[in-house]
Image (cartoon, helix red, strand yellow):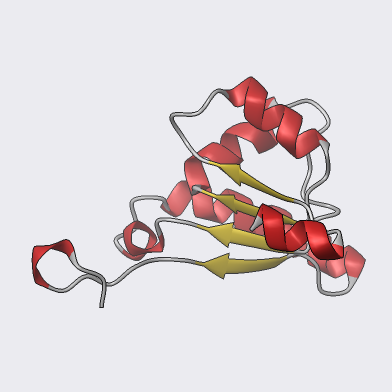
Length: 111
């Protein structure tokens, strides 16, 4: 995504668990247009990363949507969508949340 985005000036960041929060905070401080994230980690940053917000964001891609459907992340999703809703009211339609997941057939192969 970074290679394609560089051509047109679009910045992106990936924010997932298991990666150093400080490294991610630095990436988020560059005000990416697109963030691909897991719900729990983006909530961590919203609550704990000083100065971070979703105000300049165009697209928020939530990974692990299959788990969202099982309500594993109900609390985190509620928090993220509340933030997005407030921003959308002020900014006339931004950011747009996208949900991403794979469907698998037998033996773990994507459909």
